[in-house]
Image (cartoon, rainbow, N blue to C red; front, side):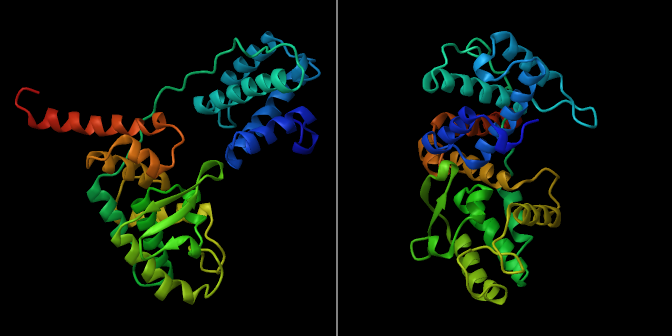
Length: 305
């Protein structure tokens, strides 16, 4: 499989186009780069010198290869991974035709596999409270964990947004925080009094004991910025301490934030702004979750349900 520094120049330009002009997140662009590595290896195995020489048959054979590949333990790859790889290849060929003087688009007739719609699994309000109250034991780690979880749920933040917050991003008086979301898009989000109290406790009684200076709001016990793995551990420990079922992730709190707002009467476009979704269609999946809860209540309570 080609190495990243051996990618053809036209693919390097395509990835740069995704990052700079389309504003895709670095993690998404990196995933596309891995997918295109695989596509190049597939073309090479078929004797095709590069994407510009590929035919529709070559692209369709790649889709078949994606569906048939297996992990080391014999399990198939997730449908979402297959669909993403096809999207990467389709986007590459569209770009080549538009920007690189390639006369045809062999992927235009190849549809991306459908992954279906998977609904988020939010926690109930009671379970969120149990999760939050399982932290904050007065130690630096406990104070940090409580503040991070309160802010993540209170503002509906992604894990990357939470760990990327600097102290200067906080407006404690008005309870606002500036975060950088997907595509480096900034937004300012409000948070509630419990989150404000937890953050203040961390800044006054916790953080000075491990990192008296530095920009990061949330740090590990060595004083460096808390990373993704560290934030996952924070959530996992809290969920275990609260006795919640397995499967609670950092994103579960974001799902819960959105669902609880809609259940409380918030408009879907207001929730879209708070979540930082570029399209309201991304937010509308939460209306299905809220509607599902409504049907469950109806089925349980109505005599003619």
